[in-house]
Image (cartoon, rainbow, N blue to C red; front, top):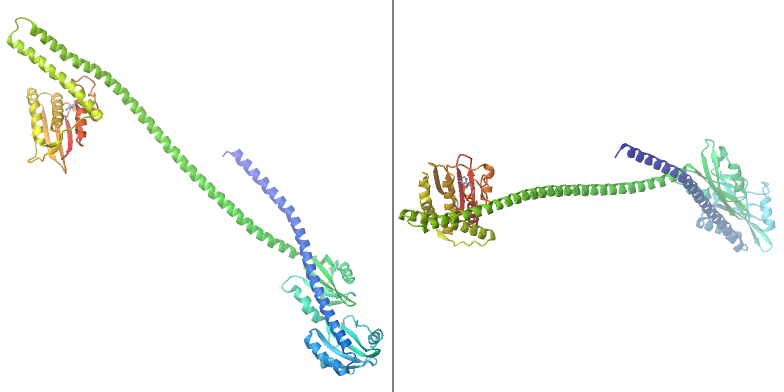
Length: 558
Ligand code: ADP
């Protein structure tokens, strides 16, 4: 990859990253707004839930007392007050239940220790509500006021009328803290934020100390709450920390209170952060999977690629090799072609020469007055040339049979020693004529081999003929036999001209002659020898160095 493409990829990456960041920022704003709205709604639902539970609870308490006042209106006072204990214990939430007689004096209360028995409303100048309840016969609930014992309490005044007769008032007191402990405090358990309760006059009923410190924007919220509205808004404290406020009204009879939930806006951010965290983990996992997956794929592809490259390389090597082989084969074909041409001329020569010699001899024999000696000589020439031609034709036929796989072997148990002696006898005269010494070294008790004695004899004669032919006067020809493990080795050596190393293999090719056609021969002998030995399942090769003689080695199976 060149420098320009690297820079281009870098620029594309940077642009993509910037785009992703911008989109991320934009969507973050939208996400934050949505989460904030939903979070506010959630707080409102909590406030609403608390408010409706309080309404239900308080209204239920009022109804219980009203039922008692109505059902027992004609009963003696004792009967009425006896029920106080039952109500107090069975329906939780009452601080005390008292009975005020028609003259405005507290005559009974439960629990007794909380009831100011004998308290005279008229004497204490606090008879106004008592009288109002007596006169219109309706239940009244006072705004929460401070109890003697401390803390705020709601006073529920229920008149007892027996027909037209006013018998007194049942006064039930519910402590505001009972309500807040039960319904409001749990709202903020384990959460960051505040919860408060106030009445429609702005009097704080729970967590009032919260508003002892300044809050920006709370006045509007307070007036909404005082008028019984519900909703969400924002305000901030002295440190400018933003809060979401959700509020809902509590209505019980003519009482109007309001529950408020105040949570810091930072909660929204931590909520978003937790969502982002989860998303990041998910995204990380996805990226890891994708990266791992693509890494794996890349690895796989690069392995494939490498394998492919190796295959291509191997195939290329094969091609190169095949090409070299073809070139070699082509060269060999050319050489073969040349050899064939040489062979044709050689064969024509070899066929013509004896014919010419025979013709001349025959003409001499035809003539008059030739002596008996000359006649014999001429006949010898004719016979020698017939032999020469016969050998050539036999060689050609043998080679043709070997190459076509038609050569037949008459295999039997034969004595190698006999074959050697026979072959040596065949060439002895010629060898001696050239002053060559023939050394035969046969081991004692040489075991017979399984072969065609005629063909093996032919091989030996051929090799001995060559040895004689290529060894100068006074040289030595040796035949040595060794028994190997299951095989027998024959070494026919001479002290002749020798053969160059590069020719050692080729001399067994048909028509091949070292140094071309200078030597007298057809180049068929060794090819026939090789064919016969290999047909016996054996091997033949030559060992030689120019000027140091040659050794032809044959190894045959026993
Ligand atoms: P040829 O009829 O020419 O002798 P051969 O096939 O018998 O054919 O031999 C092939 C060639 O091998 C010979 O022409 C000669 O060059 C070489 N050759 C064979 N035997 C010997 C040997 N004993 N010493 C040196 N060269 C040899």
